Image (cartoon, rainbow, N blue to C red; front, top):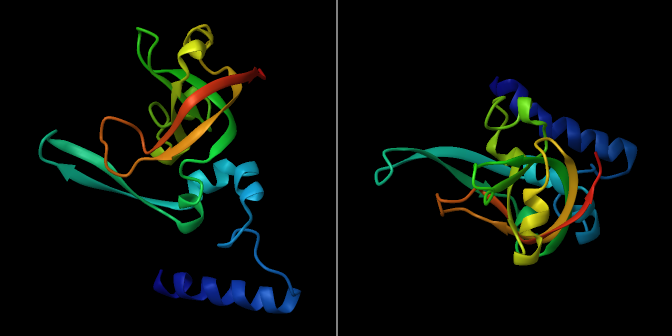
Length: 166
């Protein structure tokens, strides 16, 4: 294992020198590229470890966000994914990269593959009318959450439902 992890950066560096170009996922990509490929950054520019919270008597995620992902904190973004209602009252919503049978809650995907949706007050009803696994496009402000255990690690605030794609 140690041998494989140490050779990976060397191989990437050699390929970069030989091909004369940079790898596609490097620090310093422009903001438009980050927003266009948001799921890539949400899922791969974070390391999630679980720590024990005495107050809650359970383990919670403790994310470490990468440099590129941190630049998106507070930025307006647009993202597509599968809609998942979380509670029966219709007041908590999640957007998942995967459909429900493969998502974080049911299928064992990582917590980095879901985003909490906090809609604008005038869009709440639109989100309540959606069905589980509707493929939707939303826009809002991305918030990275490192320490509030009452929310997911990614939150889209002031979310607007742009389109129901499927």
